[in-house]
Amino acid sequence: MALSEPTLKALLLALPLGTTEPPAVEAWSEAFTTYFEDAVSTPSSIPVIVVALRNPTTGPKVAMVAALTGQLKSGGPAALQLGIQAFWSVINVTPSLFFATAIPLSLPPVGLLGLGAILAATGVASTAQALVKDQAVGNIATDIHAAQAGGTFSKLPGPTVETIT
Image 1 (tube, rainbow, N blue to C red):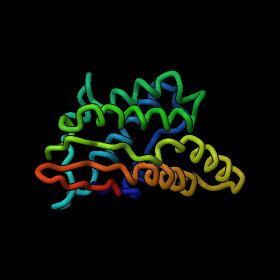
Image 2 (cartoon, rainbow, N blue to C red; image 1 turned 90 degrees about the vertical axis):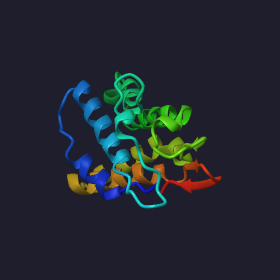
Image 3 (tube, rainbow, N blue to C red; image 1 turned 90 degrees about the horizontal axis):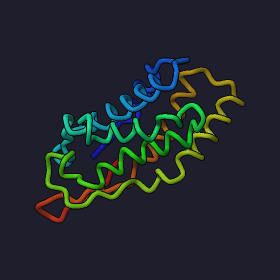
């Protein structure tokens, strides 16, 4: 399953600035969900069930919104890590709900564990270098995208293991 860093960057650049927390939480969650569902479809990739990702009661986007609510403004990078981990945790419970291919096992990317610290360091570096929005957001997209790599999905019949790239 291939995720696209340029897609993530474009989605993050489109986020509104200076909003209150509820619209910011929704915007971040929407951007990440769109990034995830936009995974490149190739014959070897695992097709994403878009409707399931956006299910208003059981989808991973809902889990991300819940994790970010009340945390995004005060927690910043750490909150983003929690939101992305919440998104993945829903997929890991029942991956067959979110993918059109039989998947008995889904392992989240290990890079998620240190994402908050990496994003915080990127923010400090971007400020120190006085980067323009496009450059700073590009660095954030690079960090988030890199943290998604390395998770795996087991496909049936198989077992065939596909790595998230």
